Image (tube, rainbow, N blue to C red; front, side, top):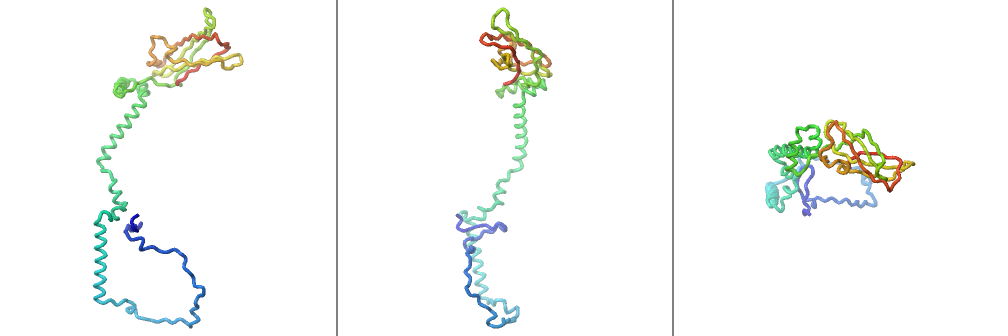
Length: 258
């Protein structure tokens, strides 16, 4: 793709990789090796170290200098051309420097991100914050009016308990059952009204019918389902159930949040 131009991973120098290709094909071995000792003992010729240096006259030295200057000019011309600027195109150091974010951007982004994180935590835990710190509820309600949300009582089923329950047949109406139950909030802050699940069973303790009642179904008309059960208080639940189509011998009351 780059016409053979590659970069050294050690010194980052760009060179022609096609010209530096090395063949990895196995070399053909001579079938018959020549025994050098068949021609007698080897002869060693001693020469002066100066005799091994190549003799270069002034003309050859001038030609070599000219060739080097020509190669340097071609390299500079290739670097100046944007289409052939492989050094800048493949330089990971220059790309890394371009990605560096100015320090003032980071200094401005950190407080903004912290503010967004605090706002997100305030949005998700607004119910628990209003329950544990009632003084903040007014401010949270105002903020929710702008953000389009609402502040509700906390849904903590572990803070609720059934203090008493009773299921009796209505003597004035055949097949009508009256469920009376007392739900207590054991924590010091308001809790959301739970769902009440009633299960009727037969003599073999098999489920005959099961029904869940929403807060709107067992609260009186004067009660606000959004207000919740006040802290350390209890409410009385009374339900009239038509069980004329079933035969039951036992019951069970269970509280839960959907």
